[in-house]
Length: 304
Image 1 (cartoon, rainbow, N blue to C red):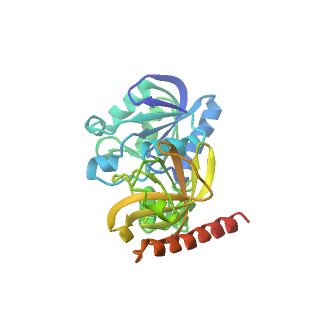
Image 2 (cartoon, rainbow, N blue to C red):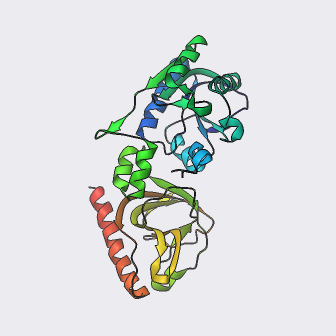
Image 3 (cartoon, rainbow, N blue to C red):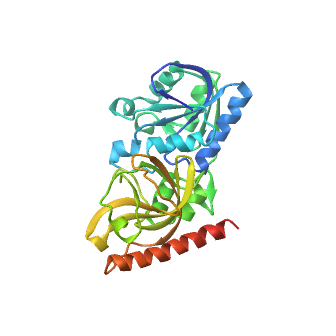
């Protein structure tokens, strides 16, 4: 999958899906599927335009769900051929709807466009799916507006997914995403406390600009160097050791080896419990024994 900077010439004929695609949920997948359909009809590629940064973060410091690298991972899983990536900065935020569209169409060879019905663009969100369709029709470019997708009467949206994440409702989140909620991160050195009681962990950096699942222990899988293992991931503080700084720590079941500096992918499936303070490391280890048993039971049941 190619990544092209917004503002650079990209002369490959492409049907384009427009949006932020903060976490690539099933509503986004419908828009991308429509772009792929339009691409197949015209014999062109399917491309997605998104942002390296988060418009919400730029305007009001809202936290994002996925990093840019994680969004690329999710988009690649949907068979996208290319991503056009824009930096959402003061220059981009000041572009009028007409200027944005003019720049996009002058730089890219767009054969068709797909958007969700709530799509907006341009300074102050002055452009909408309706105005986009009208502007593209004047240029003889096909535009397809995809209806919003709902689950149980609730619109699938990044806002709803953020709320569910903060509540620890991972299974509800996964029902809205194109693949289980995940994180990418490079394993870093930490204090190594887990080594002292039989539970060494793989730690990845905690990003204060992201929305994380509610603090607690989760049943996860861990993919490293093409191999996938079961895992138990702790998100949050470590009160047993008097450490209130948030972290992401994963014990990988049935694994031994040095993976410091390696990229891992954590997929989240179920919240097992909240953060607890134990009277001793031994009491914590006993609880971790129970967590591991629960994780094995959960995945064995899911595999049936």
